Length: 113
Image (cartoon, rainbow, N blue to C red):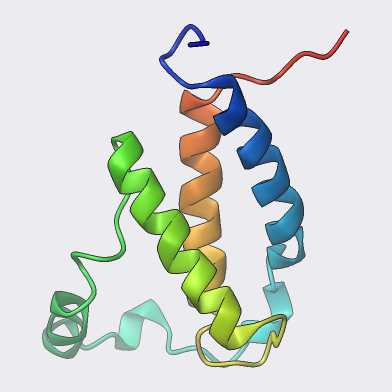
């Protein structure tokens, strides 16, 4: 069965499970104090670092891109777990926000009577 925006009902159930699984990725806030300020950002260095990630981390605009981000987050969770002090914990948070944004905009809420 297809829903209004083309999503399948099972996909919505899968997304609800996914949200529950990733709920521990709430913003870390003060845990990331000491980051380099944007004023001190070396754009050249950042561009070099970003070039290796740009094809993996992006705002999803299609179901395929969304699924790729979900797969990436699954892999990160398998490796990082719930260790909020892990160097990749903030990357998990960013990807989680991108996934949640896509779901909010493209996946209808399942209404249970």
